[in-house]
Length: 313
Image 1 (tube, one colour):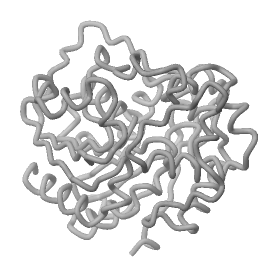
Image 2 (cartoon, helix red, strand yellow):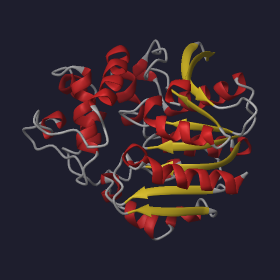
Image 3 (cartoon, rainbow, N blue to C red):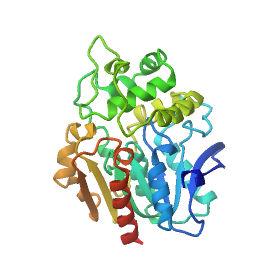
């Protein structure tokens, strides 16, 4: 059924934005928002599963990612540009209301879009990062200087690190690094890419064919926009926006996800602080789940998402 996924483009805010789609146009729409170093393809298992159960699955590539057009000034791109693109995409597809599923920084896009356009969201699912209002972004500030986000925030440093390798190798290294339980922290005489050795194997659920798909698309797009959003755009100002959303919501948390070790994150999720912002949130913990839980454990994740969608219609 994967070959039934269609690839389409729409002109959005002056840019040609790519999205993958499967399912009937008249079905309830589920929009999947990827993280880094991901693209639409990271949702392939979920798209096929929800379409088989009567939903319409849509997975865009953000501006500057995958098959979408690179903006003229990638270093000026911010999260609100992605929110504007998403709203314009939904308008172009004539979708007044949708379900959202966000992974990693896609959960940030999801959070901001929901806060600004709650009337358009039927419900949402987060993976790899929970719902967070803007004032709670940046929980990683207490980590050491070698923490990968701090390194990648520094203009030019990640570019120099990445440029030592082919884009396919960069994606390989990040997938290996992010699939582990340890928070990636480079030593004072290391760059982040040095945390992975050439002999380190890919995760067993991620094939060479998968890597080639990612590698080819990052060879096309490069990493300029990807480094700008999310890593250099994490401080978002949303004045006078109510941080509480009263929508059906599900958070799927892999207990072996390294981001769960960010300062304050376990307390935020396990002790229910997140529920002060999302009162109707259900949290499911997957003991073996990594940061890429939707690719690692697709059957479990698909089942949880489908149960949520069916209960929320």
